[in-house]
Image (cartoon, rainbow, N blue to C red; front, side, top):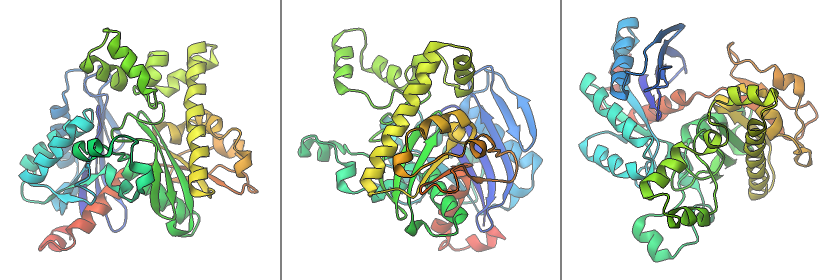
Length: 403
């Protein structure tokens, strides 16, 4: 079944036509750095500079029109699948999009203000442009619906959490699901035989403990702000700090939200969220950049240790996402001092990872390592396409459209 996947981030739109049966990507379009002077469009092997005047709405329309102009793949698609970051408690499976479900998704925007609104805008544009095919929402939070109560409950008054729907949800579900399947295939086994710690390290970052195919812990919480140090998000922070900031009268609620979502993390420590630039500065002796790398890797190692304890051991530690895939230094720093877990990094293999070729999974641990260390090229679009196809399998007429 051919599925058009729209994967919208806070400042980017990734899109691909994916054959859900074979996994083949028939065409790719990506627009990054929306709203910045560096905004550009990538389609297969071509790049076009767009500039700061390109809005998110422009980007979504341009992605669809580029698909239509450059490829006939879009003329034979069965459905459009949309990545939606926050599905709350009500969306634990892919959902057909209609006005009722779209309204329900919109009400969750308060929990993911950087991500759900762009996804909703993309859905509306795509439904207008492609009105004759079904549209399906696939939710990042759904992968973590298997979290046990001890992992998703906050220690707050029960009447308060029940009334306001406060609990931990987790995110990056499509990425962690892809890592689970890719690692199992690489090791020629099944997810049900592995305890995996999946590290999605990018501008947004999270770690999941995946025990025998089920997510049992994850670092992000009710919103995508909890957990690791990220590009512009602080991650874990003492709630007393937030109270202190509010009581200082230097921040109101909106300003605190902006601080935690947009001005913290790597940006707060170094004034940039680009790990490549931070590594270059650190190599040149810049102390704030050196500290940022140390803080970043320390937080990852801390979660790896904790999640190993949660699962009673670990078989695989996997790295994916923009930083996890491309930064040998960060993988090196994140796996330091893990020998007690039986995890031994092969430095040559780590530095030799190259996902520019057809390789999508690479073992970076030493041969005698009891715990495998693996780098995985992310492919959220494939997971999203396959989940949407499973949701559509019972719809009349879908099979004919997919041919």
